[in-house]
Length: 507
Image (cartoon, rainbow, N blue to C red):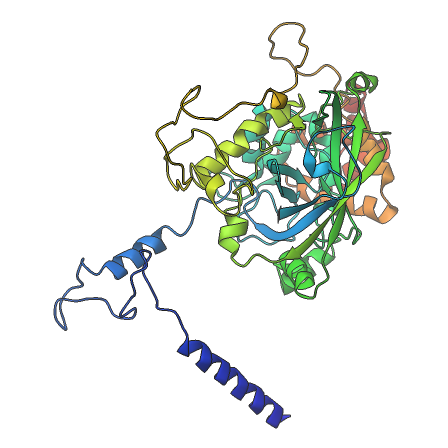
């Protein structure tokens, strides 16, 4: 045994010696070789350090700036490269060539937590980001989603307030369930999502073993200009595995990076995870058939069958975490011909805010970084700004022009949407806030129902405003009387008061 270790050590030393013999020169950013990287230039043996030591200055400057602003949400992320293989021919639905049968498209996927900071435990109760960047032959398409099929709110105007309520208190810098449920008790549309989040789906055991959802409805447009509304669903071939309340402290105590370690460990072994992409499809006229607004992102499309279109396989851990996972920038506005946004109010806000966030966070020309750069030529009149590396040449930086052969193709115009009525600022008409929360509760196993109730009781016990507590309980009771009763009893609340308040709520 000792002899084997000694031989191995000698081989390693020989390899290191050979590597050192062929080592490249250490250089500064301008490529100039560095003569001494251990000692600063000084004015004599005991004198002050010289400002002219450009290597010292450069190292300190770069060190001071090696952090970009942390994402406000989805700060803790894990990325991997892979590919998506389209199996079905979707030409009847879309002209997007990513959906041509047999087409293989490179992808980069970033999984993430949402609310907590970059160094936070991965086991915390939280939705999980599930964002996929497709490097298609028509440009990049970002499918920016979560591991749950719906969201908390339906209008982007509430998004900053929603996030603020979940973030640390601006006075104490502590997260406070009292603030969260103050917001949720005044946002009844969040009831179904809370039923998802406080179930064990809110604490996945593995990024490989969770589904992903596009959450919003999108439009697919075919070559004839025909429109279909779709929802996207990534189904894990590894199955779904979650942590129970009893497991969370045990796992977190051993390794609070377990989701990343699990994914990267599987990739290192060649156990490449796979997800099947499923779609639900509706014709525009069918949107009106639902008892709720079908474009409301707090709702699932119940009763609409799913159709498998292809499979995604992750195969590779990024070589550089910062230049891939951190600098990767996703925005739902990054679409390709044949894919368009729906009129979902939350999605409409995200079309602006996500891209704007990346311009602030990474820089004006973030799309020119390798991880974000399309695999096709980019030709436009954007210019200058920080991180500019477009390689654009010539005098023409405007349009229209007769001095440059650059055409606009009418084939790629956005589809037309018939409009009626006036501009307005009103809530949607068909809300149906609580029905799907009840359906979700009743779909759970007995043990999962127990955990859901226990998780809610733990956080809701910190509510200091009695009216907020009873309002939230009335939402759960309206969703399902058993559900509301169990949470109320866990909080030692007056069930009859909860029942009376629930009776006054509309569906």
